Image 1 (cartoon, rainbow, N blue to C red):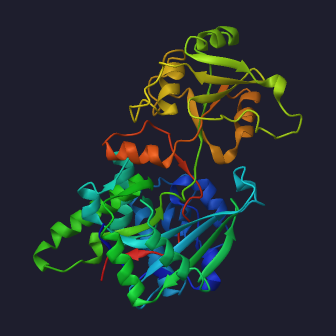
Image 2: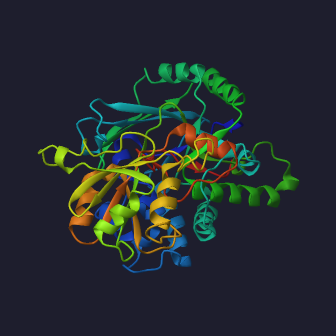
Image 3: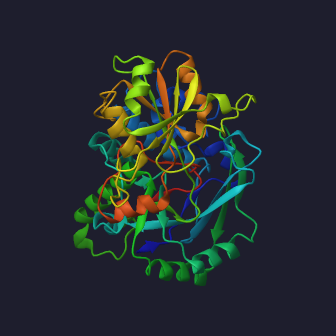
Length: 436
């Protein structure tokens, strides 16, 4: 992999909590407007620039993109974002705190350490940065417009690389130093810690080690990756006669984590109806392909304790229907463990439950189904069914990082709504400009 240090644009230490934000795509315009209320320094003014206009303004209005540029220039002029004088790499640690609601059932704090780098556009275009999801052209074009107007990558993409002891050792040394930033961010309650790598020998060593890594994998940020690479390609073609060596526009902002540290959680399904079947008929239909067990008699009496009903292993599912929890275990012969797609529980559940019984053919377009990230817990599934909004909920065992790597290496694409990485990257800790 070809990577590059860069002159990051960052908030002063005392402003980082005011400037930084959640990623643009995890909340809607009104949620961003509410989070940014009373805070002119919030990055949402740049990454969700429609909040600078009256509610209901189309986020794709040309005035909205222009406002993003105006806000970016304002942030730099006011000193809310300041550019480093020298090219750096950075270390970014995310910690799931066991005493926060976001603890995801962990009894101890869990930290993952990423290296913030400039990733090479050609590594993406030539397939060395590997993807496992399809992208939508309209969403790609939206992010490309944003990058073009700002001439910057405002938000990083989230990569995984095959872990290496030598990189782990470098990160361990860097993180012994006093961090540049260290704070717990609302509303999720994750801790974000950030170090600047100033030592030139360490920077050169990181670059050399990455040159030995054959591939990286997009964990989160497929549209941002496609958009950043697309703009980089445009600028490379436009400026090819200039013969500039490794210009900034041929690199884009990425945080790279070792694959053995990442936390993938379940991505669950809720469905509005049973396709004309009664609850009894639906359960009977499931018995053709699954071992069905009623778990309700074994449940703990403690409110909010769902440990007894969480899926226990691959090919085991939890169903909530009619006020009861059921365990569904796929029968032998109903899946292919040698097929990187066929082995996935999202494939099994889509084929044998959603399609075969409920008639849901396209997860991207069917309005009868919705998806719930596991960060919300199984209580959210129960709530949405008990409220009458949904008829049933299906909890899945999370995919593994190795499954993602196997699929990306084989050139396959995962089914929709398969992976949910947590924590999400915090935006605004560092920005990458495309000009030298």
